[in-house]
Image (cartoon, rainbow, N blue to C red):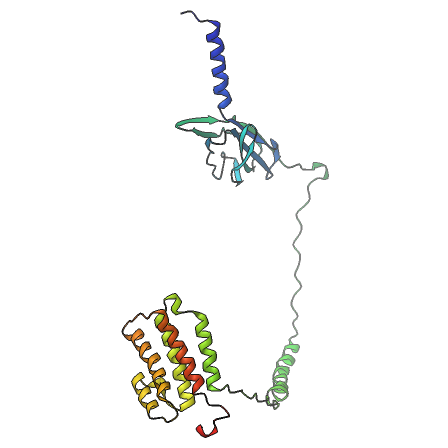
Length: 310
C-alpha cells in the first residue's frame, strides 16, 4: 500500500490534536529530602479542559510502609487560558531513615462517554537521621536525689485542731447570730382589672393566632382573659363555671345592660363551639369576638366615677 505525503501530514495533525486534548498530570514534592519526623508537601496537579471530569486517587493513612499521611486537602480548581487546573496537596512524613519510593498515582479521566486511566511518575523521598554532635561526648545518668524526711514533731497539728472550734464559734456569733436588717417592703402596685384585661386583649390581638389557623388557642385565650376580668370585677368564680352558668350569674346582676349580656354571650358561645364542636369560624366572627370582649370590658369597667358599684 502506498502512503502519500498528505497521509503523513494528516496523521501527524491528528496525533497532535489527540495529545493536546489529553490532561497533563504532575506530582511534585516541595523538597525530596527531610529529617526523621519532619513534614513535606506533595502536590498533585492536573491540567485539562473545564468540562472534563477527573477523579483524583483515594489517599489513605499511608503511601507505603514507611511514609505516613498527615493531611489531605480538598481538590482546588482554577480556570486559565489553557482550560482548568485541579490541585490537591498531601502532607506526608516518615520516621525511618533511608530512600523510599512514592508510588505513582492513578487518575480516571472521563470526557463525555469516553473514560481513560492516567498515572503520574513515581517519586523518591530521602529521609535522614538527626545530627548528633559526638564531639561533646556522652553524659552519665544523673544520680538519685534524696527526698528530705518529713518533720517528726506534730505539736503544731494539735494547736491547729484547737483553733478550728474557736474560729467556728467566733464565726457563729459574728455572722450567723448577728441580727440581719429587715429588707424594705416593696409595695405592689395593683393594676385595675379593666386595664389588665385590655392590655392582655391587645397582646392577644397582636399575636394573630386565628390568622395562623390557631382558632382553638385564640378563643381559649380570649375567654380566659374575659373570665379573669369578670372574677376581679364582679366577684364571680367565672373560671370554675361553664359558659351558661356565667351568663346565668351575670343575668342576675343589675350592673349589666341587655346589650352587654348579649355581647358576652356571643364570645362565650362561639368559643365553646370552636373548642368542643371543632367549629371553624370565619374571619369576621373572630374579629367580632375580639371587639365584643374589648367593648364589654370598657363598658363595665369599675372606675373612680362609679364608687357605688363597688
